[in-house]
Amino acid sequence: MNTVKARTLKPHEGHKLQRMKRQFINQVNHRHARIVLLSRGGLSNAAIAQHCDCTPTWVRQILHRFNTGGLEAITWYPYYCSPTGPRKFMAEIAEQIGEVALSPPKKLIGMAVWSLQKIREYLQTQKIVGSISLEWLRQILRRKRIHWRHTKTWKDSKDPQFWAKYRRIRRLYHKRPPGGRRLCVDEFGPLNLQPRHGRHYARTGHVDRLRATYNRKEGVRHMFGAYDMESDTLIGSFAVEKNSTTFLAFLKSLRRRYRHGETLHIVLDNADYHLTPEVQEYAATHKIRFYWTPTNASWLNRIESHFTALRKFALTDTDYRTHEEQQEAIESYLRWRNGERPLEILDWETYCWEAKKTG
Image (tube, rainbow, N blue to C red; front, side, top):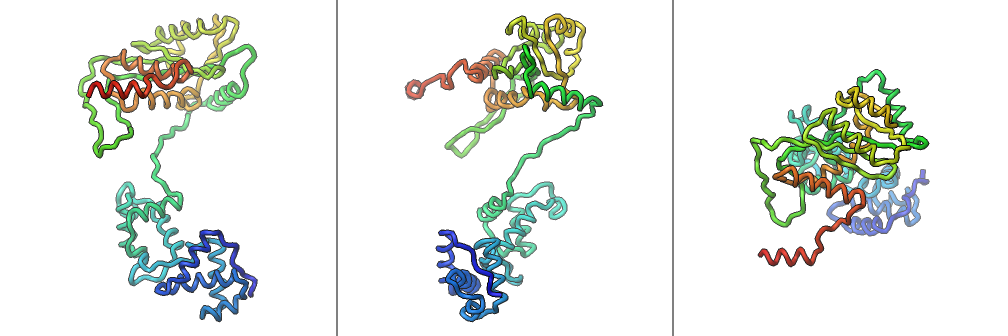
């Protein structure tokens, strides 16, 4: 019965136990710290029970808690508990707080989403805690690895040939065909002239204001994009309309970029203008093979992840007034992305001099 011993203490645990031992007002922490320290000193459980005025069974229980849960499992703070509720240890309270935060708010409070204020109010109303600050509640949730996350959409593919198309594309990604080049093609857009919200560093307490657009009479633009898996380059070509004529022109420009002897293996979706007889005839006579992504499975096209970065660094937090300005920004990002220009376009000293000059 005396075989239960406290595990080896970490440096910070030893310091914390010494402080808890001196908490004479909080007799719970005082006694638990003495039990662990005496166990590390080599005393048997029966001798520890005599020194701490408790039973050997309680000594073993405290040592088990410490060995499995650390200091939080044996620490108790009265101000975390309801005045009329039972005593609770910090580990038990934190576990219950985590369970509340992960429970559906619709059933508990009749609302669609939690907030820190509403979690705190619910915890206090249910007498799980007596009082707790929002910052300490946030830290408890963070320690329990409970974070706010945005929801995402997901759509299953109903394509009857899903697995056949999936395996064909995966085999292409896994191994480059002899004498071939792998390309991922898709369209980016439509590109409107509109203010796009985003985030940026700022010292001021207010946010930047963006204009509201009610009428967009400048039309839209489309970008045909291609990701070259062999050279890790991203290619973009702009067009006013998106149809079989403009796509065929983009396909011809891709064919001219590479040696005539290379076969182009292109992953793309089955949009209507990709399936026209003119496009199919040109592909058949110019060493181009298409790999169709299944319906509602555009995530199989690797260019999609590169479009995400393009949208973030070229369009987020912008308000372009002309299509030429917007196109130049996208092309500038593509040049940096492909290693054709350095990151900086203006050195810091010149920027500071121009800012001082303009006042």
